[in-house]
Length: 327
Ligand code: GLV
Ligand code: GLV
Image (cartoon, rainbow, N blue to C red; front, side, top):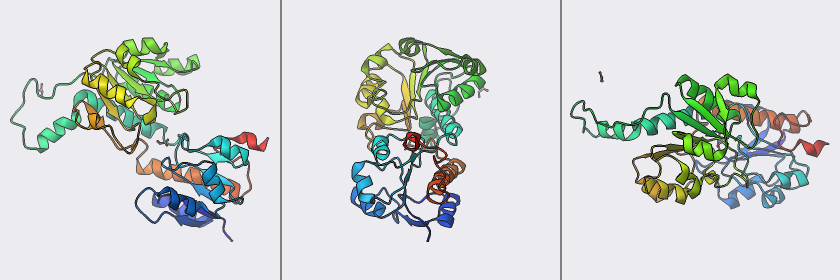
């Protein structure tokens, strides 16, 4: 008998096939996020669970699944939705999908940066609305991107990939992180390590690339926006909670900063109403890893982890977040 797994939302076909070839798959039949009750009912009696970042995996869920549960394979690189310590206490491996979405996410961060600086979204809306009457010197003029300073808050895989893209735009790249990167990595992309205050003061674009942890929650708040140039922009493709959204809205409204490109929101899927009415904000519905190639690869990595634990008995699984359970 195939091991039983619960998949909390339908994934791209290539990923579903890999799962269905190996497992008895029960999948969310709806095209929406499951309610908590549906989620708890769905995981009951399963050997493996494949949750999304919208699904909280905690003691309650692990209890609801039952003692036969052997793996939680998150369909995301970020795993703030998973109580990894709760998994570790039960000796259940938790896994994520690192690597495959790095470039796709950096592509979108760059798209947000370009869009907000060059006013792509309101200009498109204007042209579609039939308002274009002819070329004009001041029509949707924005800010240059090339030769400007990009400040990366967080210099992990995605921050580094963003630095590579910025190099192609002749941008000056500075970064801050809790630990300084290998100087060789810095040299490859021409990135300079600075303290956070310098980063905020000097950057024309601040792009956030930290994981969400208790330490990074509200890493951008009122005092941080106050240090930024009034001509500078904030880009966030990390997690909404790293920015104090109310303070961001206040800073935008006060003209303390020039604009923002946001893929994630503090109270997702709710978006602060103050953001929705501002033309200097580009708002996307958390799609940074959303290419068909990458969303398929994310599913295949989750499948590899499930196969390793439930079929091959290979431990730790390839991208294990708590390998200490095997020590
Ligand atoms: C997406 O937000 C991810 O963490 O993979
Ligand atoms: C703009 O369209 C230009 O030709 O300068």
